[in-house]
Image (cartoon, rainbow, N blue to C red; front, side, top):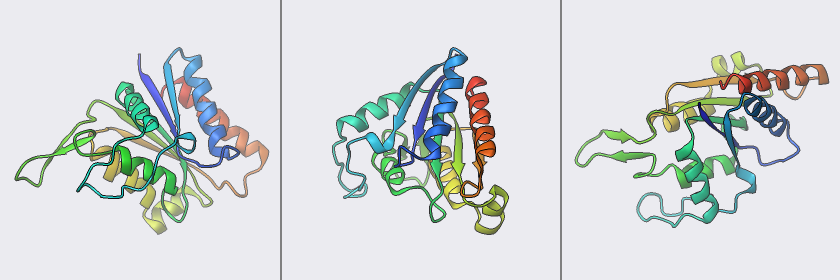
Length: 192
């Protein structure tokens, strides 16, 4: 049975992203799957990778606990909005601080290649937009997806990585939002 980790990257607990994450969680629990969560906004950590990779900053207890959850998980579900084409700053900081050499990937000595240390895991990115998903892909080149899917998760060996766009959020009525919540419940129920 899959072990699922839901990573909520929205900083506002009153956001629709929290509802989406909760619906996915309820569906996964109903399926009998083991589910853990990380709500990045609730973690106490410095999101700034102050020294880059030149000098290691010790991980705070919340990041250490998050890392243990990531290691246990078979399937990572990322829920976040797209802001200015990218991830919220706190989500980017979480990745910067935790997806480190020796943990999620390892450069090979005297080589341009690297080892992918998260092989065997899969992921699903669920991202909210204030535009249609097709528009974000076609006209903007989906930068947040490229960053999280290709440049982070796949770089570290996570494959396959599914992407679901939820939008247009700002103009959605209650009926549409309920449909999206039901869709998330079904994704959780079927461990997608």
